[in-house]
Length: 320
Image (cartoon, rainbow, N blue to C red; front, side, top):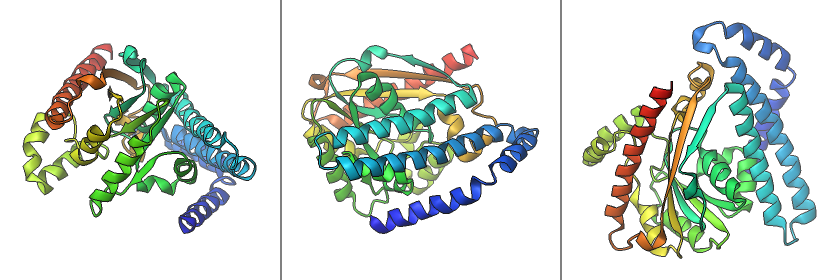
């Protein structure tokens, strides 16, 4: 962990020393290059990048401060959670303004009620913030995340994410039992004032990844045909959660519109500009979640997720 943080913070330092002095020239050049259709939102992407750099350094200073003066106090976790929310909310708000996004939330009643396990569709780098901001933020409570290990390359996510109760899992499959235990332990320790998030697909869904999965795992082709908007859910971690669930409802989150931020290229080619985004939550009470036939139950809800994505896509095209 120490070596990783030395490496990532050193990398951020080197990048900042190069990028910040060149900011006027880079931003001016980006405005000229935006005359090309394939680069029409390059200025927005550059402004978002520079805001990220400032947010990262501000977050590191703040995280260092509370480690020095609050790490032995009862409010240490709460202070880290405040930083996490501040960091993510700031980046999200700036992205919404720069790209002039139009976000509509459906099924808001599902956000209310007791804490829950949130199972969300995953299509982009941007949709990872939705459960924390729109579910946890709306309820003013913490959300425990199941995250991929690779995100620890971002210093603030690494430091704050590991101080808070989250699980950074290895998606390679080399230690599936260990990853499942991480996820189970995270839920077991989840209190009455915390919810938990997991992405059943395990990675961002895309046409390319669906094609790769169909080639590498022919046994999943029927599921890929059945859920043509999604990747099949990875059953290991989710099934383990069902077995150790202390009594939390399940809240599902479907959304469309974030496909335009699936990669860095999408952020500069204009596909995310003035994008309408629709989200829909729905809740399944704990009493209606079977433990012994959970796989069929999950597949049924994944059918519902697929149908909901179709409905939201149609609604988006109608409104567009």
